[in-house]
Image (cartoon, rainbow, N blue to C red; front, side, top):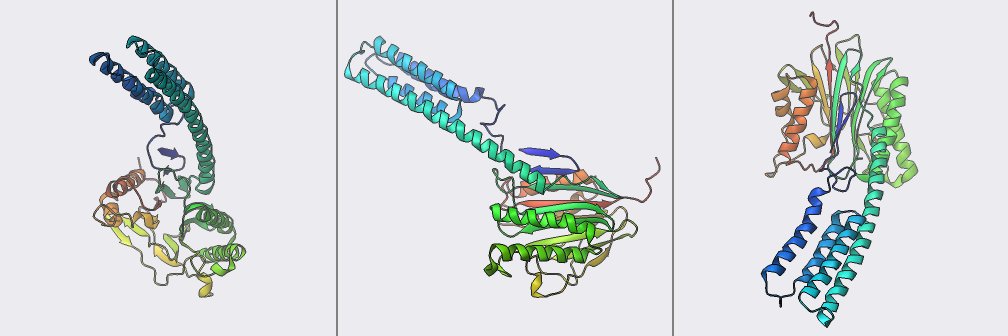
Length: 382
């Protein structure tokens, strides 16, 4: 299911349309129990009257209970019970022990099917409510990125690894601040609710610190302090161990053709200049968030040239660790080079398509990507 959102952002939560979701067509699902009834009647007509096929009818309400509503299941149960009586009368076995057993079985299976359908529908309703809450939480954590910040254009995509997952440990944010645009992308170690909690805390911290701290290095310091405080509160024994978050922080001042990048154990960004794609390897990479206290100093931002017309691509490891059936990793840089000269939205769409095609549409890890393009200081002449 694809959820297009504002601000050049698209979140894919995977999977096909939920067959139990409101609005999903029930016509194809009705055909299966109808087909069972029709086949049973055809067999009954084509075989001698001594052959009893009425017990086959009970499969219809069972199939209906698995996919259809309670009332539809009840209707199929009533039809099957009626047909069972009619066939027993037609075969002149009504009142015999075998006939009574067949009738009792039809009634019992019909009632059980109705109860089963009711339980299934209740659970599906609860699941839809949980998905709705999860979707709201996801939108609060991964808000749509602004399509423009100063002279920057932004576009992003988020791909969940599981069809049922809407919340994961990947995070990103982009904010206009007094110091220029500041962007965060990160990947929390782990999955599930613990990763979601860390993601929420770090995203909230970045949204506050990005406006207040004068340097992007100090923003990274605030993230480190927040992470350590959360770890100490939850379980001090996990300090400097397995609880960490890889991240990139980027600051793009509006009046300088540069970008300042803080590397915190995260995959290196790609700089796109026309069809040329360059991987930016940091001179002094920092440790992931949650482990920075081991060195005791603030991470040092790296300054790179970032001119009008160039693009900066940030991503999580889901985009480079996705494998195909032969175990080959997704060649992100090569895919970027193939589509680099297209429009920003087309580039992101092409990368998403290439990734899913390479991985066979099943990702082992969440994947997030943000592309930033520096626009010309003055619009081109018409």
